[in-house]
Image (tube, rainbow, N blue to C red):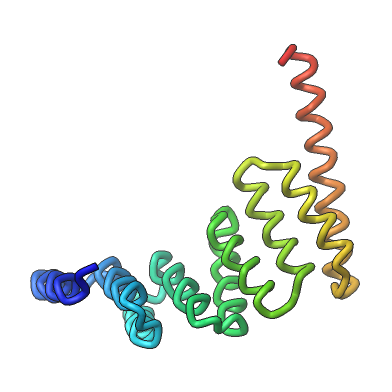
Length: 170
């Protein structure tokens, strides 16, 4: 990879867009991250989010950078806040699972992975993740209840899907 050339092209893009753009800043952070400088990527993302706080792409990049830095404690609230806005984003759920696992919160990691699998249409995998979350333990009463309820919901959905498949002859 030619990082000097990438940085030069980025400087040209910034020159042509004097007002700036979140995509350009996301690209700048990606270049630094891929060049092996996650601290520089973090600075770029932080500055860009100050200018473009509602940029979904920059929020994604912020999570990517935090995970690359293994700053799982900082990544979890960033991802949880993003998921309040973008519950249907499987990649955010995947990153939350990674961050939770990085903090040793295995049950919460499985729970997040389950939501990712639901969004990807893999109901059996989601059910298995929720069962793993139950077995892992370490959940407070409310979260354990939410896992149990979600598991029942997905198992019912799966049974309905299977019944429909049998009825349609598939």
